[in-house]
Image (cartoon, rainbow, N blue to C red; front, side, top):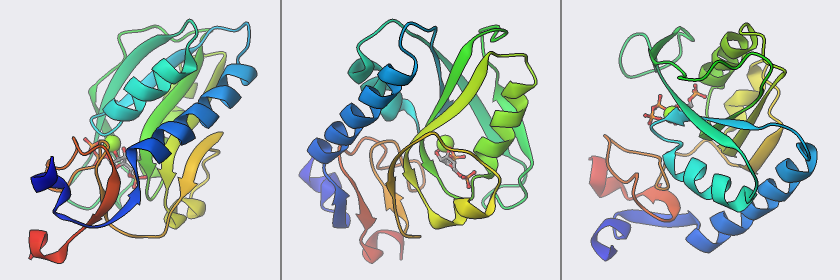
Length: 181
Ligand code: PRP
Ligand code: MG
């Protein structure tokens, strides 16, 4: 994948570092939900890689479901208005729901999702994310499991895209300016 990786100017987290971090997060999650039901809800499309690797690192009984959401108005997502493109196939009443995403930027998507899912009478709703940007601190959002807090940089790879590309990179990094100029 050298031609794809070559578009990165800096690698922030390697594949091995990401897998180690997910193993740490999985150990905490496994302890917190020991003997309890667990339903992972992945946020399409960025969370696909984290869901695949975190769910396997958990190495316990669990279920997986998916939601796709979109901010109104293209491009920026500053409005905080979210609409459901694909809802859960699962009735979460009485369930322990763990929402899984790969990055929290403004936090608007997940704060909306937490309140939406909380209204469906689940037993619990928590959030796990691999990456979190500083902006998320401005929103009222309790994140139970965070891999890394990162500066406000544009990052791609491991599910994160630029114009829908780079999601399939194994590492997370920053794009070289020549890619988008
Ligand atoms: C990205 C990312 C998070 C969300 C975070 O998804 O995957 O889900 O934005 O942004 P926020 O904290 O500012 O709300 P996006 O909506 O771009 O779609 P994608 O997952 O399909 O890439
Ligand atoms: Mg997303």
